[in-house]
Length: 146
Length: 63
Image (cartoon, rainbow over all chains, first blue to last red; front, side, top):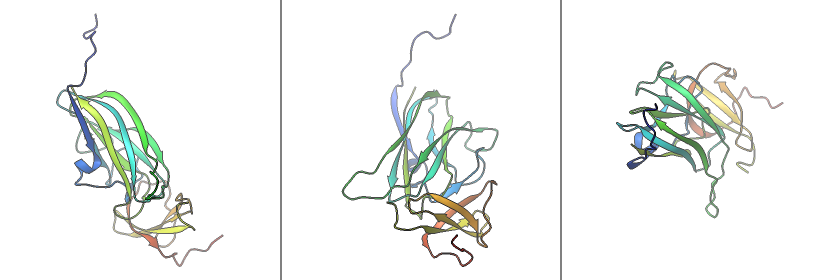
């Protein structure tokens, strides 16, 4: 007999971002081409709660006029990422964007929609640089803690 | 349009060496190069853009 036949719901919203986890960082100027979670320029996006978290989506909002790149999302069981405890989960193409003061820039979303193990983490890397400091993407993760 | 013409980023790799990225007018990547013009291949690299309005490197010859 299944151990749990009743749906569960998150008890509290949990919205985190690369900025909130990395002193206001705009992701983009620094690239990391590795696909295994190794190396520098890998940034913590979300940490699941003590009872796990449901992660709905990751949202990418351009800041300035970033060049084209790919964002890679990694799941990790540790705050010290390596090829064993960190796994490439998904990628999203982020096109070049030209800043406008009269029109909204495009926004991009990556659905996640699954429960993350307790204390597991999401990390992001960019495959190329989007420009100088301050030019890139605000990366926000929307979820809730159980 | 991202920029009117192609452009160059000046890069600093994680080992402290310099390099360049060449981008087309749409903001797409044409290539990433070491300071001497050697293309970066499939190896894992980490770098940061330190100047997104760099001058064209001397070794570059338009095709």
